Image (tube, rainbow over all chains, first blue to last red; front, side, top):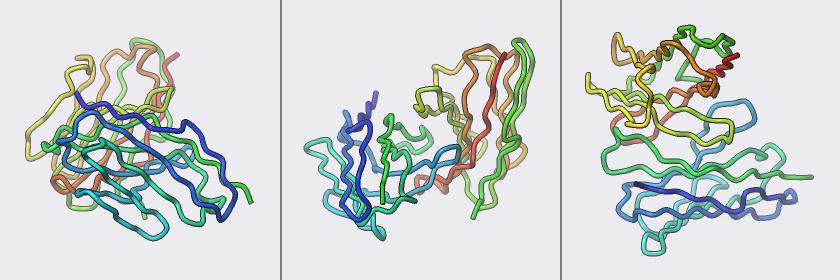
Length: 112
Length: 111
């Protein structure tokens, strides 16, 4: 069964500094890897999904995938206070109907 | 722009009651999901429904059941709620294995 772990649990960054989040998974045959964020009391907002090893950029968000290391990261360029939220790593199996397996999240706080 | 709608936003009930939550998506997707987000904020898949095929997470108690009238709707019924059912229930939809879009969630409190 796929296990997803995220680190750190929480992260405080200054506005404009790079924020880096980590996610490790147990099954390297997973189909794709996604990053969502959740503002307090809200639903999930899709940020970036990545299928192949390497890098994928969506605006200020960049995901890096290394299947051999069972690792996917998220980098937030020039974070703003409105980026303060919980960031969730999710892994999809080849049978998409099985849904996503999520990590516990990293709480990011951005201060001016 | 919200495209996955859930009602109600909140629901408070007592142990043993039956509750039903609604979910509708306007994206034309073919697959819908229900997730449970517990007090530790961990999201776990409960059900997925695609072309009349229902996939159930084996850990979901039998008092939970999904109900679908068409591919745009997937409701969740809980028969005889228990205290551990207090959580946020999130509905999502996707077109096959592509991006899943989530609704805002329904927060259930069982007294």
